[in-house]
Amino acid sequence: MKQKELLIKTTKENPKDEKSINAQLLIRAGFIDKLGAGIYSYLPLGLRVLENIKKIVREEMNNIDGQEVMMPSLLPKENWEKTGRWNVPEMYKLENNKFGLGWTHEEIVTPLVQKYTSSSKDFPKYIYQIQSKFRNEPRAKSGLLRGRDFIMKDLYSFHNNSEDLDNYYEKVKDAYFKIYERCEIKDKTYFTLASGGEFSSAFSHEFQTITNAGEDIIYVCKKCGASFNKEIFNKECICGSKDFDEKKSIEVGNIFKLDDKYSSVFNFKNEESKNILMGCYGLGITRVMGAIVEVFHDERGIIWPKEISPFKVHLISINADAEEIYNNLQKEGIEVLYDNRDKSAGEKLYECDLIGCYLRIIVSEKTLEKLSVEVKKRKEEKTQLVEIKNLIEFIKNEL
Ligand code: ATP
Ligand code: MG
Image 1 (cartoon, rainbow, N blue to C red):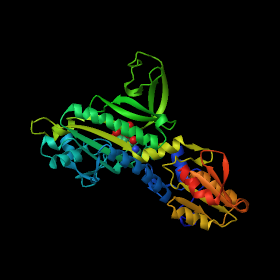
Image 2: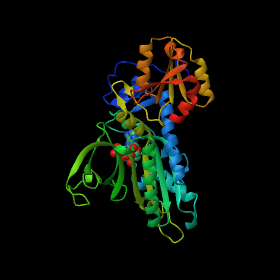
Image 3: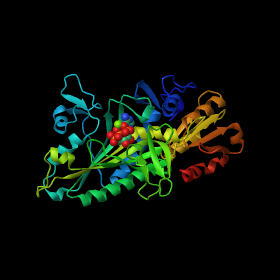
Image 4: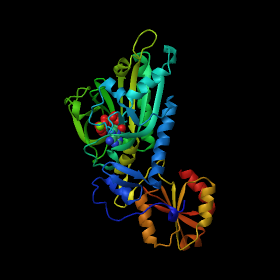
């Protein structure tokens, strides 16, 4: 992609109405556009990032036998009245009061799977979607961390017995950590015990990523590493220790066992007349994008992890022609953003750091004299000259 054709306008000033680092940087660098509090458009660069995160989540969900579906966002009132969740504050209700916008999907997925199963042999089933959710969040001030219109991956599992549910719960936990590992936030993400909330079992588990922008407080045991959300914390760890670190964090995922909370409402049983047991597993796709920016940035801009980077390579020509290099990279299937605009080197490098692609490649008169280009990773200061004839191989090794 040539940068001059991209729908983008970067700015030096922070937007006045955004306090969070993720929103400031993502807007300044041209990834998102604000329409209102907690409502954003994803511009081409931003959408590429989102698609990269979705791809990782899909692959890891498919690895644990998840089947992808897509349920509607416009949801009939009857379903919610059955479970008593029509009048929750999160729900955006439409004028005619017959529909609400989907903020979660237990009320839809439970009767859906019930309709397409008939015997205990049909279980387990694992159904997920990646879809827009709508929530009337009163405090939508944290950029992508708390949207009113945001994207979530929600997985629901259906089981004949609790042993099967327990086993799958562990599998999902592992899959979530693989996702966070590929997003490079695993080291900062804690598996945290939390309350189950009004509509689920007594406890849930949250994946909490440490960041100052977080709205949660967790306590991490200094002795055994176990972690607890402040809302259930009782000052003593399961290992007996009372020594904790207090940390600010953001919930990037959440898993809990619903058991028969929803199946009982919808009268969803197997042929032995036992209620089907359910688990539900949420992961905030857009929130993960925001969290990555909170974790990976410096005073110059965003520093995208390799798998998330909107383009793997940002190729910049400075008083030189890099057209042939650009074409060769494209031919090799390397994702490259090419900046051959008629702008000063300073301006181009400034924008390059702000956008934060994984690799920067500069082609200038000086490098061409040595039949080379200059390569630098956004996360490192070190630059190196690579001969053009070895460039493709060099990049492929780096990616
Ligand atoms: P929070 O306590 O932060 O409001 P929640 O408990 O309401 O989160 P869930 O209903 O379990 O969240 O949703 C599953 C996942 O969706 C969360 O773990 C989070 O990653 C994401 N999520 C929830 N609310 C939002 C939001 N308003 N904007 C972006 N992502 C969200
Ligand atoms: Mg919430």
